[in-house]
Length: 253
Image 1: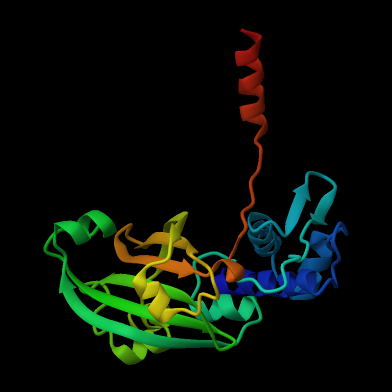
Image 2 (image 1 turned 120 degrees about the vertical axis):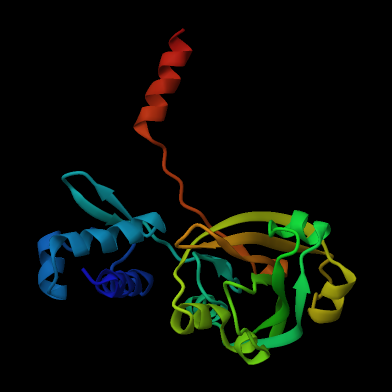
């Protein structure tokens, strides 16, 4: 089954939900209806629904269908952090016009300090990239990225301004699979003050991540520093019945 098929269905259904064509608390069309609409297999529909459920758009109910649980954010201006996606993909999803300004592009070799901070081995040849992200012309995100030169060869300033992930996936043919992230709140630095329009803020939301390819090898370390008024973190969590039962047994003892 082509991966693009269920992803296309996922995007179409997601658009229907976000536009409220499928409103909050309504039931999704049945599997059979979706199979007819998209001319696909049952498994393809189920994979698309699973992606929506994972992002908190719908909740499958065993034997009763799938309910829409998505609601629009009440925050007027925000940049919702999503999955592994390019800056342009994130901006488009959040309805912003984007510009990227390259601050620094350099080749470095990891020393002990860089190794401790990023996770790359000492002696590893790396690309070091600093970029300012503008949303509707407002410089509000400062990205510091480090790439393994052996896994992302041929990186240029032009690629950094356009899309590094697009280059990695389409030109290099590497599959980007997983990212481990940590979110903190940190005081602004002198570099932040020079690069961003802080509008009186003295702290930033900082997303630090290590990204891995299909071989489980880290090719990127990134620290993305967000102005608070443009940052929203949203996650979906599920409480599993097995854990509830384990807790009940422990409390019984």
